[in-house]
Amino acid sequence: MDKLKNFIDTNREAFEDNLLPEGHFDRFEKKLPEAGRKHFKLYSLVAFVAAASIALLLLFRMPGGTPVPKV
Image (spheres, rainbow, N blue to C red):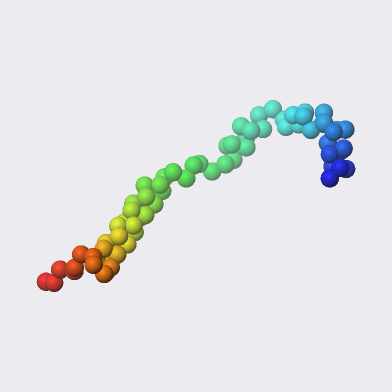
């Protein structure tokens, strides 16, 4: 660990310099895919339906819960 610390201390200026070319981050951002928010509503709806189904199942099947109506 001491060798690494000494190397960093002796070459601190090289680590602090900005070695990336101008506009690097802009070009990199353009290559990234768009944010995945287009399926957010669908996933939210599916999660809500699943949670509601489990809650109703537990409500009707738990001992002392609401009895299932007989038709």
